[in-house]
Length: 116
Image (tube, rainbow, N blue to C red; front, top):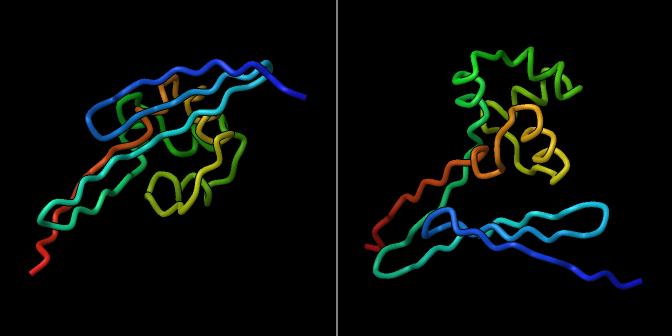
């Protein structure tokens, strides 16, 4: 079975590009992080911004556990940036519960290291 796929490309800043593929019953969002290596090594670190979003909305981790229908251990890992992977379904659920965009969930920091 083949689908006609529509897609949207957004640039959040010079380092992040979002591509959203729209299928008939669902969508897939892909984030691409660009890094350019010149004379120094550059490490791009992507961190979750969930605790900051909760703080801004005066919400607690317990509130998030209840609304995500999750457990406290999982939410702690997300808030403390100890998760190593995130499913698209989780990103979608976080966006719905926190009423935000996927780009709001992440912060990108570049750390430069000299090759010397």
